[in-house]
Image (cartoon, rainbow, N blue to C red; front, side, top):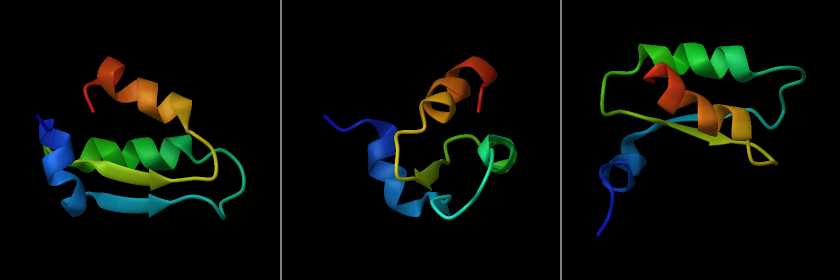
Length: 61
C-alpha cells in the first residue's frame, strides 16, 4: 500500500540544489515551512541530504 506522500509526490515543489555552493539547508527549510499541510518538497542533490530528511519530523514541516 502506498503512503500518502507517495501518491502526491508528482505535485511536490522541486528544489534542485546540486549547483548551489554552501549550506542550502536554511533555504530548503524556509520553502518547507511555507507549504500547506500535506504538501511536500522534492530535493534534488548529488548526495542524500540526511539533515533535511531528519528535520521535518522534529519541526512539524
